[in-house]
Image: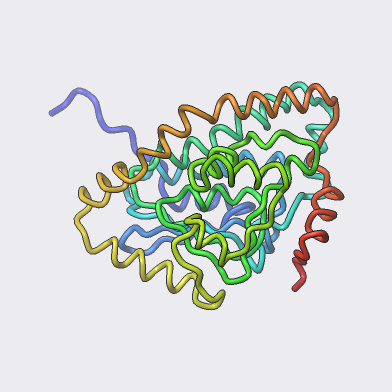
Length: 283
């Protein structure tokens, strides 16, 4: 008998409750877990607080050995509806502190955790338009609704697009297409995203989750070790991309924030961009 015991993992019920303000979590008996982002049970509205919760939740899910496959998605008809009206008040109060804590540390954790910490296959489900789609695009398999629009608003808002989406676009689009998308905040519709190889399937909205579970069921037919090792194999290009791009990109974005001396996560800026692209969260 060993002189020490295993330290128990945090159980599903505990972290399901801890993250309920930002995620609806469900898990099947076979270990397929779904994380659905929300704000007050509607489309996700970004804030300093829930931005941190994304990485914390992903770490909790990745650490739980009872999870066998993760499905990551949003709520309603938008993947990310924009910015919580008061979601960046903390950043405004102390820009230097939060430029590091939010823009640099938390943001790097979110992306790096998705790529490096997970030992299980991941499926991203883009349920509609929105920013920060890298959280689904960098999953092993990505499906999207027919009305999905992939776009990055950072440069148009006066911010360096260095917080993960740049790495994602470069890996999926190549140098020229990525540069165009980042410098013009190009609105990439679902059909174009499929043509460019950003997503694997375009699915009617009312079939999205059914299709995600069908894919999950197919993957789950294989033995546990095979599933887990295969997920590491297919994820290796993302791991190299994170090593090459992520820290430097976040550092450039943070320096840009500090050089301007102002918060760029403005709800007004995002609303203006959504209007220019014809994106309406009420549709």
